[in-house]
Image (cartoon, rainbow, N blue to C red; front, side, top):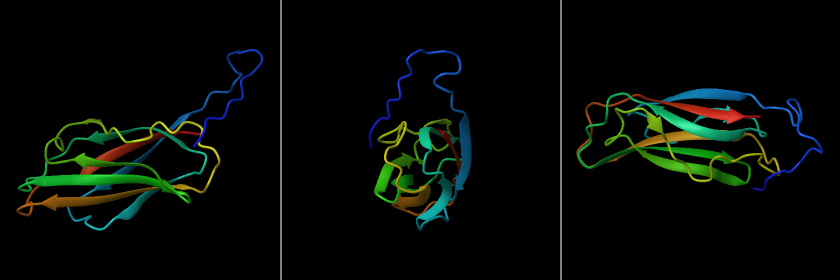
Length: 138
């Protein structure tokens, strides 16, 4: 991934043009134990940040995570195993690797956002669903 540099000769309020922030909302529950595509972003999207909106924390005995993966045709762009046992009840940023992916070049297909829930130890009886907001520009 590189950075596209189209530096204008003069910077004005309209040059270079601004890009609007758009969002996708996904929800992951304790029953989402197989990875599945939750959202698809256009190939020219640049993910800026991901926010988890708090719900009920998982009561799994040892660990509980929601793994978010952003991928395109060339493989994984970014991923994160979000601890929903320790911080599932709070709202906060999910610090994914390789974000923000500003001006992804070259474009190699739409970006899929996949999610899966996993836990270890005694199975949970409460927790979630967890809502994630993916903010991107294009």
